Length: 333
Image 1 (cartoon, rainbow, N blue to C red):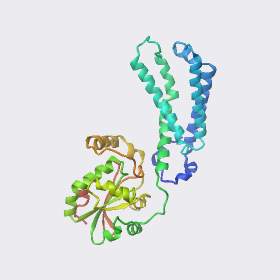
Image 2 (cartoon, helix red, strand yellow):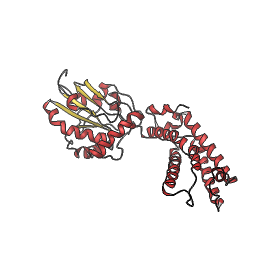
Image 3 (spheres, rainbow, N blue to C red):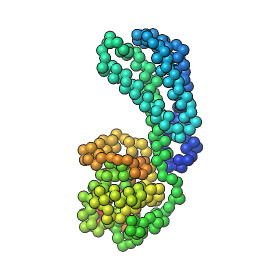
Image 4 (cartoon, one colour):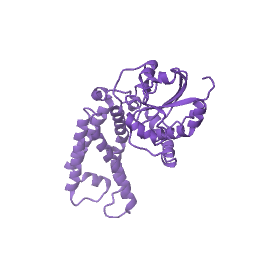
């Protein structure tokens, strides 16, 4: 099984989830189903074994522990169903992962709030059950959910456009195409992250603060976003950018025409991204919101004149913070 394959899943049609499911996902869920059903049957048929092996006090009502075995077995049935199409049945994986997260949390809480000899305190040896019951499943289950999110958030497949075709087809809120806007003029076309992303909000705040300098350089900003026009207007008004040319691209055709694809997990959720996200969302108070578009789409910035790219900034991670005035500097333009 190659767990690294989920890092760079391309955009696909969500209706083709069964065909696009990597084999390792089905194998993981089949193993989880087999393990849970086997473990549940063991607890039901021999409820005292685990207590004896770990040195835990024997329960007075062993039937309650047998009920736990039944629940675990039912989870196994759920995993078996999900293994037929993991990307479609991702809610089952969510429920399973939550259980595998809360199990260790509950055990840690028990250790922190009880003392040795307290009634109800389980021995440390009981913690070994967490390894096979919970911990070893964290990474593959998370990978399946990441893969499912990539699939279900992907924009619908559309025809690929060349740069010239895209510049002619896409128009701003006033009906002007990029080709028309850039005729004899210099544009700074900023492709934004989805509107709920703190880095999108940070970018708009940066553009607002740098706009006077951009105007002085004769560079007109153009904002490309993934929301519809009505939502975009209200969103940009909050940053005093409603008069700036803006282009709605829910299907991300224009993004792709400029060579901007969907990010890998390290570009979107790497340690540096989390740290920058904390600083932008909390310390700088840009906050976050509901995803207004494809959460995996990467941003970028391009200096364009007469429909041609003369300078570009391609984000290596979603957290990169370009200096828009530096991109728009007049040298070589």
